[in-house]
Length: 403
Picture: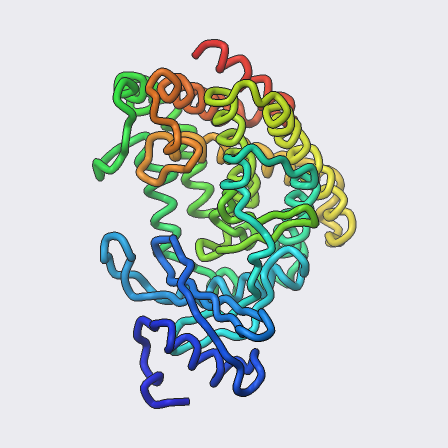
């Protein structure tokens, strides 16, 4: 390896191609390569290297020492975490994450499968596209990757070593603030409230002590319940889809936490897709019907697959039928609660989603945001009593009538 690459620096396209040739041996010697950056995130730089003659390609994702937008210092370890998590998930659900070819410890660069045949789920849903297999596929991914990483299955010592390995303090801190603190206690003054919704947010979030106590419980659970290796940011922008299936990407927020956090993120983001069409394109009844059905099916299928997976892989005698019932009930209480926190934080926090940003007419935006907040509150407050996706759908339908 060239001595110029013996110390970390932010690579340009020619550096990425050189490293791909020298380290990964993915392309034939003498291949005519091109490289372009495709990243639009805030934490990593993402490149695609392509063989101009064969069309064969590879994605390179490099971590930098600073956040792209703010210049805030950032630990480089998150890319290593992502590489290790994708390898673990790939062993459990081999067709549902990108393949890992190499991780460069010096450059903090991950070389992985190019999944350009798949499209960003969030962007596709904003366009009104429907994916009938989504509930089936994402429920399989969650059941196959979450429960096997717990100490119901893993040797206790192995699991404890993993907890240490995946202690992702810096990125967990972001979640603890942006998702589980600031929407209810804006102590950093970073919340972005739509004009006209200030009093609504003040009353229903900032001054709602009952809600704060329940969010506090969910926050404590997120910070202290090292249950499973969770993706940590499983929103619809981290899921890429086509007619054949899906690929889950970007587990850089992964750590050992509550299973329900991943499930809740998936559920919560489906409400943004539904709300966008319900308020902006109500004539698109086909998509609205699919979104409601998808929420119902994601809950039902994930529940059934977790129960089946438990029966297949959990064998310790103390973890009997009554234990299983208690264990899974807690997962679902967490899931519904975290779905609520995800919905609320995207509306009032500074990390928005396209479904909200694309709506500029206050006549539509204000009631849509109020409906999402109000539904999120109900999911948090009623989480222990809820059992089905149909109940979640009914809550949102009732709330939309009020706003």
